[in-house]
Image (cartoon, rainbow, N blue to C red):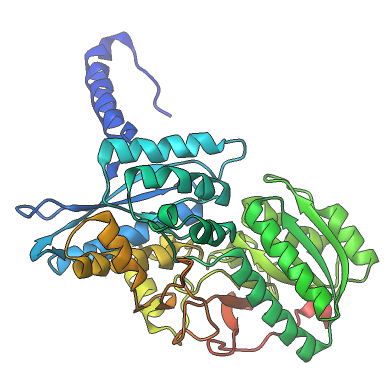
Amino acid sequence: MIRLASRRNSAVFCLILAGLFLLGLAGCGGGEKEAAQPSGQAEPVVMAVVTALGSSEGQDSLRAAQLAAEEINAQGGISVGGTKRPIEIISIDTREHEAGVPVSDALAALEKIITEKKPHVIVSGAFRSEVLLASMDLIPKYKIPYIINIAKSTKFEEKVLSEPEKGKYFFRLGSNSAHMAQYLGGLLENINQQFGFKSAYLVIQDTLWAQGTGKAVEGWLKEHGWTVVGYDAYPVGASDFSATLSKALQGKAQVIIPVFDMPQCAILVKQARSMKVPALIVGRLAPLVPQEAWDVFQGEIEGVVCAVEEYGSVPVKAAPKSVAFVESFTKKYGEERARKMIDHGVGASYDAVYMVAAAIERAGSLDPDAVSSALQQTDMEGTIGKIKFGNDHQAIYALDPKEGAIGGAFQWKAPGVRVPVYPPSVAEGQIELPSYMK
């Protein structure tokens, strides 16, 4: 915190305050200029990151977009109708990951950067599905191609198909709730075959995307003969999961399936250890994904099987661009920052800049309708696997990175290694029961 000064230094502080004021003006426009623009070049193609920049997903999505822009600029930029133009990345924090922030505030931030900075494309949009769905009524007014890498509700596809004139500007690279449920279903099937487990307890975050995933997994479990011992939902910010764990212990659940992205959910794993719950934890626990999680939680996460929204920032040998991306990210931002990198939205944001650049070159202009039409024709290899879109403007996800974008799961193993275990096309090891279950 800056503390204001004694009277004798008032002149100095006036200068400081003036400087801070000018910096504040630069930031409050919501469009901090992030990427260096090569001097003496044509007007930039402006790409915006409009998401929850206070979240791990948002922070690293912005860094990934900046990295891609710098790489493209180093090659001369984007050819727009025969003229090479650099990329400029701008951003605004929608704060939509924070408890209590209304959708209207996030929409106000979106409209602010559109009206003040006039981006040509949004390369990383809403964090929350509630914000995404509301944005789908706002964006067509401004006609801006809009890429989604984080928000997950499948209501997005429903809206694209039911309102195609509005939906034509939207494309989602990140996985959706159904993909996560499908990957978890395949993973649970492997666990059943390997260990004979057949009972599970679901515990989810009470948000739209997690509800969608949780209900889909519950349906899969029942359909495949599993016993669902319990199903609990916790509000954003909850930090005590002992009631659920007690019921899981009493019901002899063999697998606990958490579905969360809030930071507090890591407490569930620590409580499970302290309560000696003999169940394999298999699910979506976003804070346990980064490489640094092993050290942060002092090895207590050994054996946890973490669902991966998209490989990309979690590298796998079967997707070579994911390995190259993580190496470039580490070189630019350092080992410490790279160890904090989350999976969801990050590789997709990097891919989004390349994907949009290619679409603009195919379109030959920045006309939003032409760029949107070109985006629909995308067929490229990215960090998240092969990228193509369905008629619902959702990237096609698959079990092999040669056939589609890909998510899955890794398991934490001593001495702090993330071993990809699902799907088989990217697996670099098998699931092992943690020591407390042997």
